[in-house]
Length: 347
Image 1 (cartoon, rainbow, N blue to C red):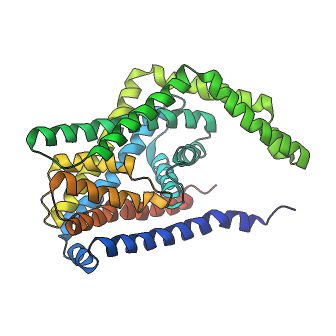
Image 2: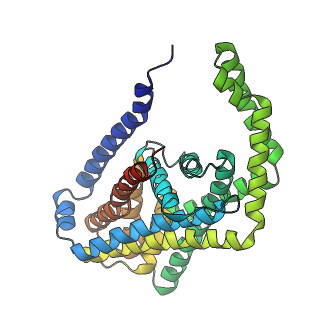
Image 3: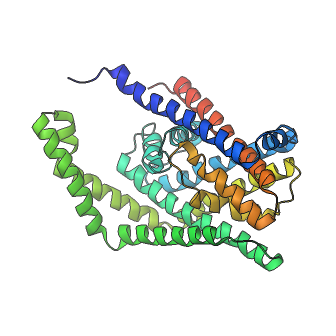
């Protein structure tokens, strides 16, 4: 017996509410361990004009990533306009508020941008794969540039964890690139094996719709479509360059948001330090909670202490304000975009 449709739709919402609740608890623990009331007092006294600028920079960074993906997707079909941007923000909303959303973000974004434009999901996912790889590589580039400027300009503390994260990101990107270009047979076998298990299970249970989608011939066609689109995207160097450019602008936007958050609190944080810490913290500050809550705050705090030499409580206040501007403000904009998408373009 299938569960009621209302219950099925409610499950992601319940997971999101639980995830956000846990994230708030983790933030409370973070604040209590890094200075408690002193951290909150510092944030409350922030320069609101600079806070607004930091929030704008955070939203602009996400919008830039949306443009990055748009250039990659356009190789399959010309898309754009308000509808695409609202669809991207709505996908980002799901990615930001769901537990493990950072891990499944590619699938979520691919689904979000494919539905309004009747794109095949596998084609959108191929474009997202290219955009994500370039996003990863530009994160390393922006962060490494900031680190080089810091090293040349002055001595810094222990940043070995962050450097290891940058190296790890390069290794992951190289591995994915090798897998989708040189060892496609391995990927095809893995996908075929996983979906084969699902097909046999659907057959035994008599779930006809799932059985049809997981049929080996259907899966094979989708895999071929994915690789065909991947090749089309990769061969268009101009659009690959634009995809990478907007990805890099997005990371600069997050670095700017961090620098502005620090300035709003009167903390002495060099722009180079912000450009190093913002992308690097996203790579090493992994957490299963929505938006990587907990892990990123700790990583930003540690990074600012090491690179800018600010006290822990000050660094924690900057990290907290930065996350308000670059995550919670973004989530609010994403939510508004999701509602506007449903109102303007009902399905």
